[in-house]
Image (cartoon, rainbow, N blue to C red; front, side, top):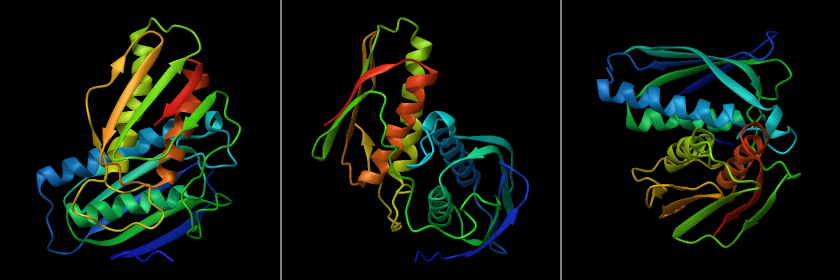
Length: 247
């Protein structure tokens, strides 16, 4: 059972596909402007990962999974986000609560988190696992033993001349990296003052492949499940892949 340093209230709504998140800061606590910017940025990256199918889990096809940031209100006393089109695994709630836990540790003390989730989404009760990997991969995937320094090669089935299409893969990876670095994809979230992963260099983008680099990767396999799910959706919505190699 995951325990939080703030109160969590979750209610279910009959409204399909809508998730509401309200973060209430403790009385007398005023987040800095930099802290509020971090809050906005971290939730935006969470939304980007979910929008690209990363939180589909093992039972929803990533191409069918989505979550769209419909509105946000960032203020010194409370922050409110509304998501629409939500079709994510129940474990997405763990990731979302982890994101709020990061804000509690790094921005300002949080008094309460209020969640409204759709009835039947499986998020009304806190799951015990973050979203897993959807098993029917549409491309070859090789994941080798994790090391302190990691490389990811994304090989396209056909050359992709349009750089804006290749940038969709890089943009998703950057959002995943941002959320993974603060430990929000971990099922057993443990607050830490250090980042769990760093980019080790600029992405290299070519017509036939994209190469990504990271170092000091102290993250679990579950984080990589979310990454692979996102690339599965982009395989169908951006450009088909032949091989994803993580080594």
